[in-house]
Amino acid sequence: MSNLTEKQPARVDRAAIALLLAYICLLPVSWSGLPFNIQWADVLFPALLLCTIATRPSFQLARFDVVVLVYLASSLLSLLGTTGLQQGLVQFAKQGYLALLYAVMVMLTAKSVSLERMSRWMAGVAAVVATICVLAVAVYYVSGMAVPLLGVVMPLPYIGQFYRLYGAFPSPEYLVNFLAFATPLGILQLLRPDAGSHRRYWGIGLAMIIIAAIFTAGHGIVGLVAAATFSLARAWNNRHPRLIAGAVIGTVALFIVVNMLLVVAVRDLQVSTSHDMTLESPAYPYAFHDEKVGAPQISLELTYNLMGYWVLKEIAWDAFLQKPLRGIGLGSFHDETRRAASEGRIPPEYREHDPHSTWLGRMAETGIIGTVALVMLWFAMLRLAYGVVMAGGPQADVAL
Image (cartoon, rainbow, N blue to C red; front, side, top):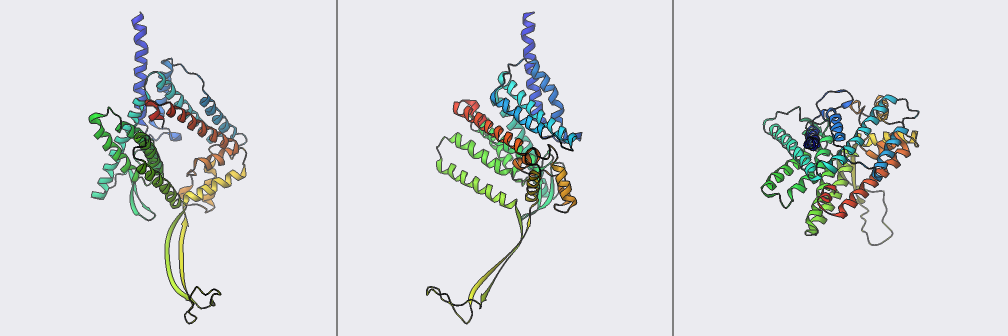
């Protein structure tokens, strides 16, 4: 009887690990067609949650958990007095789901599976997804045949027709964010002292991740570069200071350039030269002025359009100003975009676009209260990660 009771927890642990691996494998698959954008990984989650609870993990409420609860409470508070209560509750349920996912990860890593093992799975799945996507890119540029399930051919500013990857995700930004999250985990596997013959495979996988991220043409590539830079900086431990400094400067420059490209699309640039006969000779003797032809003049004409990303941020800011304390209500931002589309402020295809800014979106929907909770959440995450990193050990690399 004692052997049976000893084997039972082991079976439950193995089942929880198997469900976690299946969940990670299903994360990049978004072809379910289920309502409320529910995906196959979400369908699997209740089983993962119940199996995790069955492992009887020890769970103590930490300070970070309290911050998560405060964040959820601020989201719920924004629903008071809102007209879109149903859509708000759906969004709140999604946030609650993420909180439960966080709790599951904490419980599993405390007992059944290590952070290193989980990071290896995540990096491996991302490498496989990226490899399939890169093959789709190769097929398009060699044969001209676009694989519709993995990307779409669309015109982009300054580039023209471009096969833009989104993999099995709903949009390119989802894919590039997934790849950005997996990049430092892949670097960790590549630089492990015991990587051995697997190092070449991790190198190929990382190359596929970077190439696939480039062909998403998403601004999440900045996050990927930043994550890779900080991961390499820690791994090299000041052995290549100039290279790291150059990478940091390049990351900052890339951030500035990408954000400039997200504000305006330059349509035309014309430069012309002439002479201004209306100007008199200057009072100072240092400049030569030819009164017969006038002062040389260079004219620059710049024609541009505001990018939709910028207009969406303006809509989010206007929504925040309507109700600055509690916001317009969780999940109500698309009411503003639909109104803006009907007024002609944004194209029709932007009717249900997000503001492409975590901060402005939070400000618009939850106001000052929700934004303060977001600041607390970010601060708590950074403080928690800093403590783990300073403690050292294998978990420090994953936390970074």
